[in-house]
Length: 388
Image (tube, rainbow, N blue to C red; front, top):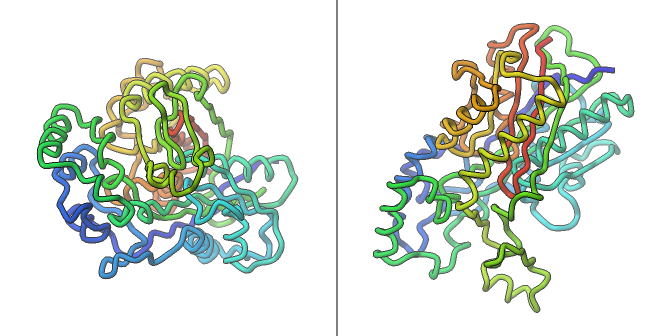
């Protein structure tokens, strides 16, 4: 029994925030403007993004749960789908509002609908795709008629200046040195305050059904492949712990008190930029080779390529790796909306897909390849879709 995407709903909170307004919304760390911000923004290519933060008060306007529920409601408005008919709710996110209960049951409660199976998947950028795969396989197997899968992020909550101690702000000399290093190599930005200028808030909800939607474009899900390459890399993006000099990882529960973990910065989101450039391309190339062997896929198969790019900086390296693996897809077939929607982490690929699906650009028979790299410990996800 095939499974189809028959609708996508997206919710992006408040008004778009341009590059000049970021520190007005998130605040200035240590009361000083970042002198590396401009270089980071030039590198990542983002022009506007969305924050669930009141720009006047600096207070949150939505929880992650609320963002997700709004995306599901938007899906229902677009498709006419009734939540009373929902069999499965599968939710992926990098950062739920709490450790326990899991994110999906909180979203289910916020929606207030009838009983359903509620599942959460963890991770970073790939968590939305793993939730999507759970829903897809459930419908494909005939275990249910439909599934609503979600991906959501609330990055701004921990990117506000109040979440950084005064010690975070570098001295003028350090700032100048960092700016010089950034100009020489934009990837170094990831080591400093890159994440404050990179991450965005938002949510997407996808309806998967066992039949295409009459009278409109649907996408048949041909397959989903997810490859963890964690055995070849140390943690690269993390929170709730810290990486030691030898590459081993220590979690917050190994501290004597939660206060000690907080003082050591365990709850700040961190990125080890030293790994990124080489491993995103090297390991990504290996997974493309595995994809070709497993699915017989080639770049010539696709009319559209939707890559989740955390930054425009990675566009060309990824293109070069694909060409080197005989998986080249011409640039005119690439579709992204990073510059206008920002990096919404696990939701990004679905935010792209919604814009393409509802933009009148798709024709029956066209094939799409979605690509989701996750740098937390290097997971790579792919899904092939066919327009029907």
